[in-house]
Image (cartoon, rainbow, N blue to C red):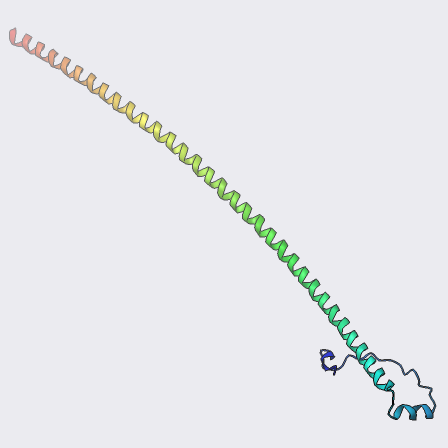
Length: 156
């Protein structure tokens, strides 16, 4: 009837109890060997089996509590690990944001430098035009001087 209350090794979980009536006389032991009309022996046997079952249930409860405690510990450890991972990810995100700001700053700086380079290019073009103008003037004046020299030399 109570085979399901066997311990993990396969044996029954039985509480050892000292014999209560070890000093009984021979007449009482013969009375307990004979079948009882009331069934007190069977009742006592059932009570003993119920006690065993209750002990087993108590052991099961203790085992369940131990397992739950281990699960709680595991969950707490996982929670700590996840919090640590989350903090690391937040730091990575902050690093990425900082790098993005740095890239934006570099892009702005490059735009300013490029605008300056365009200004320098415009100044160079302007100066080249002025130099070309000065060169034309010098060439024109040099031509005039030569013409004047040539006309003087041919007129002499």
